[in-house]
Image 1 (cartoon, rainbow, N blue to C red):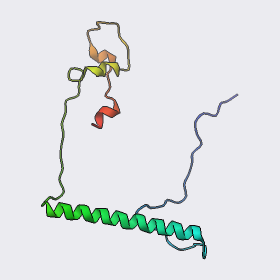
Image 2 (image 1 turned 90 degrees about the horizontal axis):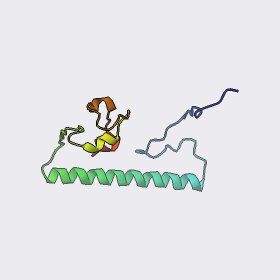
Image 3 (image 1 turned 120 degrees about the vertical axis):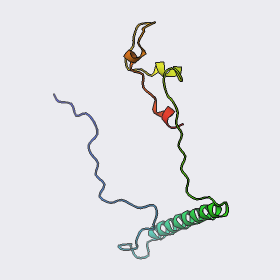
Image 4 (image 1 turned 90 degrees about the vertical axis):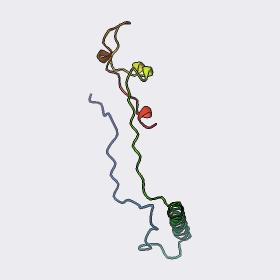
Length: 112
């Protein structure tokens, strides 16, 4: 008997943009739910605009423009011995070649 593994593919026909209020096209006339939804979207858009304007003013007042920072780190078993615990293959104790364990960098370490 074949097993059905996995989850069926879900297709979304429409996407809602968070940056703008939904259009009133097709809105039910006099629907209190639609009125509240539209008011909520307007509040979110107004708050977003206010925050972006405040950041722009603060950057202009501080004389700051867009900046980029580059952080370079050496990630290895020598600099981070805890990576030994994140290996694909086990080897006997005292194994001379660390590369045979195939250590990997956990995603949480890449985000720091």
